[in-house]
Image (tube, rainbow, N blue to C red; front, side):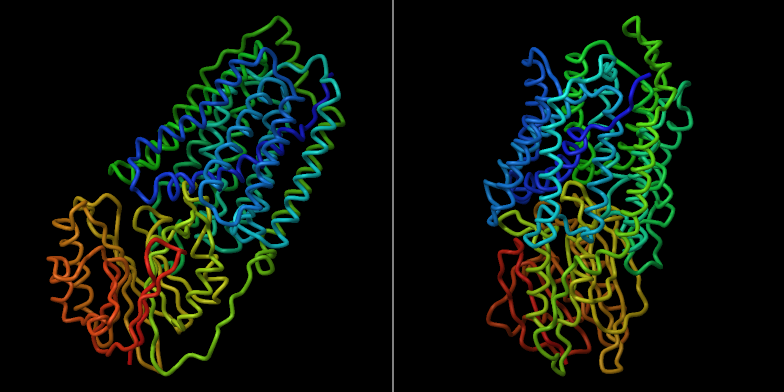
Length: 618
């Protein structure tokens, strides 16, 4: 009977890869892509080159084994340490994270050819470790931190890497056949879908800041437990339906308008709970493969498919097709391909598969250990963020006026490509703003690292949050305030010819017993600030004019003074808060009616490619 065991090499490789993806993917956008200055096809070719290197390495290796995988993981961890020491982002971050991704993807390709039955549970336990630690840190990932929490995690990973190197010196069991090539091909695309839709702490926190991430951790741990169970004897129809259905449930439903801070519907919690386990069962069905080299090559080809699927998904937001529908269709095709599998391979496969239907003591202990760890991690995910997310106190008492700021956050990334929510929170505090209008708020796009930027800032500032989906359910505009809040509404603009979705996020705050209507938007240009921008500006102008009493609106309006869109905005009767200011912003604006603006200021900062603009109203 085969002994079923987990592989530390596989666990740490998956965990490190997910950490490095959180660093690498936003670096593609902010550093290589330079906020859309670089043609997207060039950026895609660079990403494709990075993810193709492991396939080339696998093709050149005469033999691959766990010892090589362990050394690749150790090298990737060394890169991770260098990235931790780099505080300035830039090229070191871009090319260092690229190297780290190459090393960890190559390590997992080698693992696919050498770990056999331990591959799938090891990888999903790495996913669970990543989700659990990310949730415990409140979504403020370790790769962006420079405090005791990230050091503690690095120490844990260092111990695991050392243990993996030590364990790799022991010989594998004689019956440790590689997984099937089909499992190798599906490994990285399946990981991508799980990360995008089913195990994303940022996405889950848009439902509830406590229960959402906890359910994600529980679901990721359940996937590791299920992967440790005997492989399915018959075609896993139930897993196929649950996998595709969970992805559809997570991506397709629109947010409920009544939820002030929410982005996804509560139904997505079901997807987070059961979807990852269904994915792990699908990967198990193919059983053993023919040769280690063939499976390693198949995994390398899957890494190339990862890149194609990654960009096919996010390109939908620029090209106008339903990106979420593309991902759901991909899930259906993947499930169908698994169900169409006919077991084959060496003569001993039938006996090997039969032995996998029984679990020995080592397998039972692994199941029990992972189950207990999952329960503990789920509990910690619920309570730890209250400790791990630092509070940023106010610098001074607020004055008599109502200070309002508008800030395009660039998904939280500064000009050097680093994610610095503490710096953003401190800048907001220094302005004295009681109301903040935010543009380009990202609440869990893997492309931008998978952080719920709004939840992090809300915790740091102790402010209530209102979120308005625009590009999709987790990307849009927001309002932060410490004032009493009511009458929340969210309205999407028609698409017109703009590249990315846009809308109006609105709420009423009570200031000195007086209601003030707040409107936040991010007008999306169609390339030349003509038709699409003007029509969006007209809709925002109508919303400004419709408010009774005091109204303040603004954000990144992508509009210059004197343009047709600017004239459409002023037609509302609202006044430019910076009309008399010596320093005027270019395309970010604050407009108000029923209140007089004073002390308008443009605050330049490297924390975004936009300045923060601030004005006090009386």
